[in-house]
Image (cartoon, rainbow, N blue to C red; front, side, top):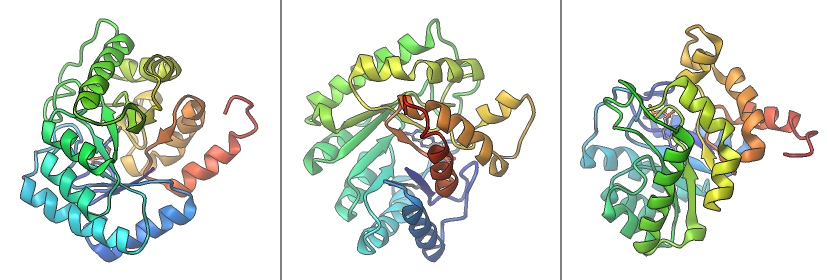
Length: 260
Ligand code: HH2
């Protein structure tokens, strides 16, 4: 899944895709390089990010989804937690809603069900503004799994079929480095216990710097991200990445492993 952020403030590519010509060029490159999905987002969820109004998010996301769909660059996912934005993006041609709040907004679940769309439910502790202040778990894998299991049932109750749902442990969303690593180690367990494919988004995240014990600028984290992508690929169904060509090349290098 290639990331297409239509935001001025995303942590690693903020402002790059606000112009549609640039966004469409990036989308074409990601599709040609092998992205199965393009994930369009209009609100940054980086730690400390300020919330965006519904109108502003609609303005950023809907015309871009329309342009991508018109050019046949789908399938398109929309990264939103707002029901109104999800509904408008699905009307505009998206067919999956990637919700970092795991269906907190009932209207989002209703829109997904009405459109017979796919749904990604992600775990987060707290909210972006404060989530990295003091993340705390007794057993991070068990707690994330229990949360996702409950949110799967809630989505099903709202009319979304189980088979339309993927889950995501939410790397970096209210987690320390050791929480993130425990979740990556537990990916196979989470997928097997919940009977759902797992999506992982670790591309360019702060955990990459944490694993190196030094601050590495976000735009210089691709190669290191890909090393981890190859290591987790066998345990997850989808990787959400900024550098699609690099990720695809790295994954090809991992194909000799019989478990991938
Ligand atoms: N991470 C980000 C945003 N959306 N969605 C899912 N399902 N999983 C993730 O790990 C995830 C996500 C944050 O990354 P990015 O989109 O690059 O940055 P920003 O939120 O600043 O736009």
